[in-house]
Image (cartoon, rainbow, N blue to C red; front, side, top):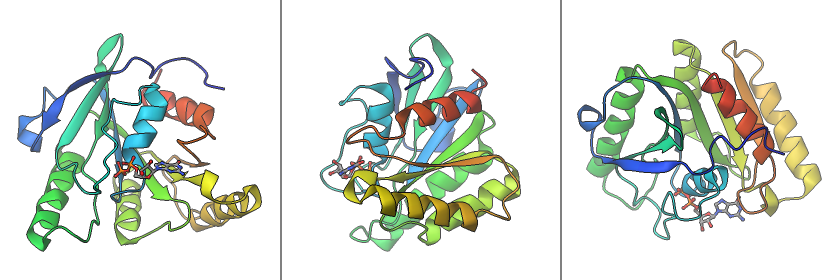
Length: 202
Ligand code: GDP
């Protein structure tokens, strides 16, 4: 169960091609990142209960811009949809360009309060996911790992993946949470709500 309806009714602010185009850097933001096709758009849609908010791409890797959403009643609390990474079918230079957009956002944006790192529970911890976690640890940025698409595996397997991930996080000192999630059947949604409200100090 969700603690409140904090993220329902979130509004699209706009798409921006680089950090310098973003709206004023004030308030509080949570950034969503993950490999292409990990289910980033679906997770944002599940959280906001709006199936059309973040476009669910049929072609992975299409989201190249930074998409901003704000909470219904507070423009200074935002959700940030960063470009998906690791999509093999785009050129190397395109991939580098997306990497740079993500890099700049993470290192320059003062409003960033927490990161959601979305992974497919069946293929977690690819290189880029690992790099993001290391960055969170170095910069003491709280993060949430969403082990997404948990509906694709059995409950037992999902539980063991969760335990395995917790063990991997043993040395991590910055605040972090790990949640087995499914945007299809909304498994874990209440806990995600609670965690993200915490990031925004709500
Ligand atoms: P993005 O590229 O990371 O934004 O990923 P999308 O949200 O566009 O999802 C990629 C594909 O995975 C789509 O076909 C979604 O329907 C599917 N998908 C996303 N989340 C889930 C989930 O929790 N369960 C299942 N079964 N499929 C999912």
